[in-house]
Length: 332
Image 1: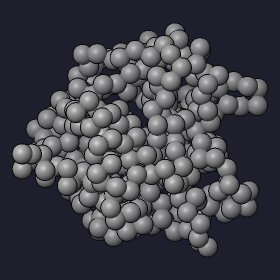
Image 2: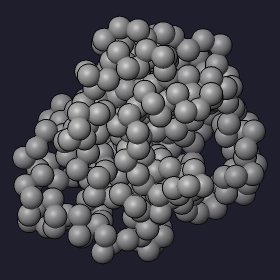
Image 3: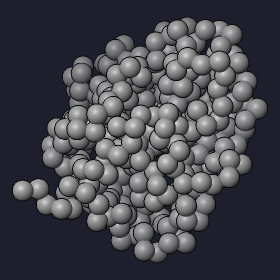
């Protein structure tokens, strides 16, 4: 018989999938819209451009890349997801982006405009963000419901049909072994929720320990040039690090420019940039930094492929993680 804690986790993990994305936001904790959403004029401008240029008819990877390109030169601002001291809620900030919010908003906008309607509001985008940012698409106000590590984001969103991990599709991939995820608990002073809520830290540490056991693969940076021809616009590029603390240290989007070069598009924190840029080729970018180990690639899937069944989601997650799905209800 399944243990009570296990049954509780399975019910929690599938909570909002059965309800569907449009209703999910109604169950999210209430913070003022001015706290949860910044840059409505920018949002409206992007929606208007997407409608005028027919982006909704493009494949999802192309849509993701179009929105990413449209946000070039947006200033780099860190920690924009930390919006309150206690209540966790889905949020968007078009006034400043970090690497995570850049790829996530690009994906969210691409998913949103695939749902035909006369007009789009900030709440429409927030629903998409809720669905991809939180484990199982659930946010009831608990900080630990947010997926804080990119490698877990890949597993959880693949289980829900949002993306497909294509890292191993073209050879050369290798497992990342003996990795210790601990960035959040070591750098807890950088995160206002962890600063203000000391009881979250040991729970985060247990979650990190579980995430460290995930079967993560990457293509080493000296092999990436061999797979670049297979990569597509809008692919989500997790930059694997050789250091302890996490599997990934950065994330961007793939873009093949008119010269045929497959480039990384990202919100750069480097002093020379501090904004969203279209950078060098992916393989060249990886070789610039000794800390870079390689790349993990997740390909966005169309919204019709999104998993709506909690049972299928749970089955997929168990299969993808080899039975090591990281969330346990006791951690919350």
